[in-house]
Length: 113
Image (cartoon, rainbow, N blue to C red; front, side, top):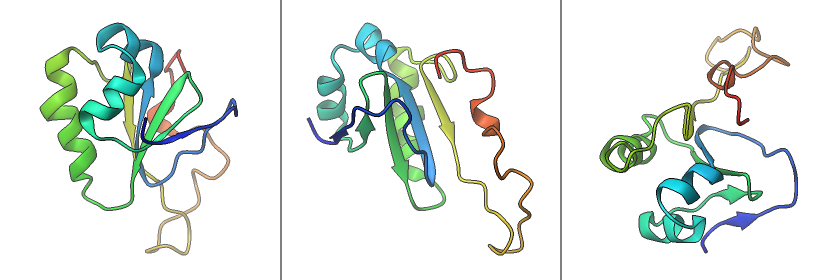
Protein backbone atom coordinates (compact mmCIF):
# COMPACT_ATOMS: atom_id res chain seq x y z
CA UNK A 1 0.00 0.00 0.00
CA UNK A 2 1.30 3.47 -0.88
CA UNK A 3 1.08 5.91 1.99
CA UNK A 4 1.66 6.17 5.69
CA UNK A 5 -0.03 4.32 8.53
CA UNK A 6 -0.07 5.93 11.97
CA UNK A 7 -1.43 4.78 15.33
CA UNK A 8 -2.50 8.33 16.19
CA UNK A 9 -6.19 9.00 16.83
CA UNK A 10 -5.95 12.51 15.35
CA UNK A 11 -4.53 13.20 11.91
CA UNK A 12 -3.39 16.59 10.68
CA UNK A 13 -5.14 18.18 7.69
CA UNK A 14 -3.05 20.49 5.55
CA UNK A 15 -3.40 22.31 2.24
CA UNK A 16 -6.38 21.10 0.21
CA UNK A 17 -7.52 17.72 1.43
CA UNK A 18 -9.88 14.81 1.09
CA UNK A 19 -10.75 12.88 4.23
CA UNK A 20 -12.26 9.45 3.67
CA UNK A 21 -14.21 7.29 6.06
CA UNK A 22 -12.28 4.00 5.72
CA UNK A 23 -15.43 2.03 6.63
CA UNK A 24 -17.13 3.57 3.56
CA UNK A 25 -14.21 2.61 1.32
CA UNK A 26 -14.34 -0.96 2.60
CA UNK A 27 -18.11 -1.16 2.12
CA UNK A 28 -18.43 0.55 -1.27
CA UNK A 29 -15.14 -0.31 -2.94
CA UNK A 30 -13.28 -3.11 -1.20
CA UNK A 31 -10.14 -2.87 0.88
CA UNK A 32 -8.33 0.38 1.53
CA UNK A 33 -5.18 -1.04 -0.08
CA UNK A 34 -7.10 -1.89 -3.29
CA UNK A 35 -8.62 1.62 -3.34
CA UNK A 36 -5.20 3.23 -2.89
CA UNK A 37 -3.53 1.05 -5.50
CA UNK A 38 -6.33 1.32 -8.09
CA UNK A 39 -6.35 5.13 -7.93
CA UNK A 40 -2.58 5.45 -7.38
CA UNK A 41 -2.98 7.50 -4.19
CA UNK A 42 -0.53 8.54 -1.51
CA UNK A 43 -1.96 9.57 1.82
CA UNK A 44 -2.08 8.86 5.53
CA UNK A 45 -4.39 6.57 7.48
CA UNK A 46 -5.01 5.53 11.04
CA UNK A 47 -7.33 2.72 9.96
CA UNK A 48 -10.46 4.83 10.50
CA UNK A 49 -9.67 7.82 8.31
CA UNK A 50 -7.66 8.14 5.10
CA UNK A 51 -6.39 11.62 4.20
CA UNK A 52 -5.04 12.93 0.91
CA UNK A 53 -3.54 16.40 0.62
CA UNK A 54 -2.63 18.56 -2.35
CA UNK A 55 -0.50 21.66 -2.06
CA UNK A 56 -1.49 23.34 -5.32
CA UNK A 57 -4.51 25.46 -6.11
CA UNK A 58 -6.69 24.82 -8.01
CA UNK A 59 -6.93 21.29 -6.66
CA UNK A 60 -7.06 19.40 -9.96
CA UNK A 61 -6.04 15.98 -8.68
CA UNK A 62 -8.51 15.96 -5.78
CA UNK A 63 -11.28 17.48 -7.89
CA UNK A 64 -10.74 14.92 -10.65
CA UNK A 65 -10.75 12.07 -8.14
CA UNK A 66 -14.11 13.25 -6.78
CA UNK A 67 -15.92 14.08 -10.01
CA UNK A 68 -14.38 11.56 -12.40
CA UNK A 69 -14.21 8.56 -10.07
CA UNK A 70 -15.84 8.72 -6.64
CA UNK A 71 -19.25 9.99 -7.71
CA UNK A 72 -19.54 7.23 -10.33
CA UNK A 73 -18.86 4.45 -7.83
CA UNK A 74 -21.44 5.69 -5.34
CA UNK A 75 -19.38 7.78 -2.92
CA UNK A 76 -21.26 10.73 -1.39
CA UNK A 77 -19.70 13.89 -0.05
CA UNK A 78 -19.97 14.26 3.74
CA UNK A 79 -21.18 10.67 4.04
CA UNK A 80 -18.09 8.90 2.67
CA UNK A 81 -15.58 11.72 2.22
CA UNK A 82 -15.07 15.41 2.91
CA UNK A 83 -13.27 17.88 0.67
CA UNK A 84 -11.71 20.90 2.32
CA UNK A 85 -9.01 23.48 1.93
CA UNK A 86 -6.66 25.42 4.11
CA UNK A 87 -7.82 28.70 5.62
CA UNK A 88 -5.15 31.34 5.42
CA UNK A 89 -4.44 33.46 8.48
CA UNK A 90 -3.30 37.03 9.06
CA UNK A 91 -0.08 37.83 7.31
CA UNK A 92 -0.78 35.53 4.38
CA UNK A 93 -2.17 37.51 1.45
CA UNK A 94 -3.93 39.82 3.93
CA UNK A 95 -6.32 37.19 5.35
CA UNK A 96 -7.56 37.50 8.92
CA UNK A 97 -7.13 35.04 11.80
CA UNK A 98 -10.86 34.51 12.47
CA UNK A 99 -10.64 30.71 12.11
CA UNK A 100 -7.65 30.14 14.40
CA UNK A 101 -8.45 27.60 17.14
CA UNK A 102 -11.94 27.00 15.77
CA UNK A 103 -13.63 24.03 14.18
CA UNK A 104 -12.85 23.61 10.49
CA UNK A 105 -16.04 24.76 8.69
CA UNK A 106 -16.06 21.90 6.15
CA UNK A 107 -15.89 19.35 8.96
CA UNK A 108 -18.86 20.58 11.01
CA UNK A 109 -21.68 18.09 11.53
CA UNK A 110 -19.80 15.14 10.03
CA UNK A 111 -20.72 12.39 12.49
CA UNK A 112 -17.93 9.97 11.50
CA UNK A 113 -15.16 12.50 12.24
